[in-house]
Length: 146
Image 1 (cartoon, rainbow, N blue to C red):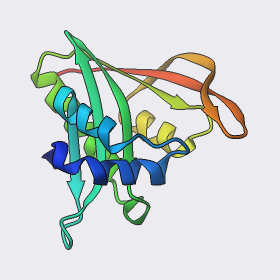
Image 2: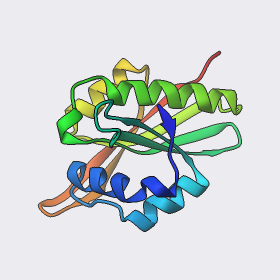
Image 3: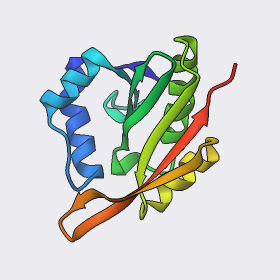
Image 4: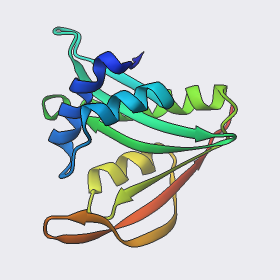
């Protein structure tokens, strides 16, 4: 687990594009590395970025903006490790509540967040724009404790 910087922006954008219908640009990623908590994991054999999480905090609350794992590295527990590491880092910075939105049809992500202790707090109809139409988002939260 390591903090990410603008040097990682292109790899982050590549992983994001492989993970979502609408990927974020390298410029977007570089901006996030300057302003937000960005943590990543690397493949131990190649040292290439394999997964990352971006969280934005404001006072005692934070939001997971995105989390993505390269398709070659999925189902290895990397996303769960990133969520756990982000929770620890945010708690150390005084954050007590973490929020996120997840597409209602993203069963794998929903399972990850439930396993990490997130609970549902709402639903946003037609939140995500997709090529085939709109998809609702579930809003989830987790209280961060020492």
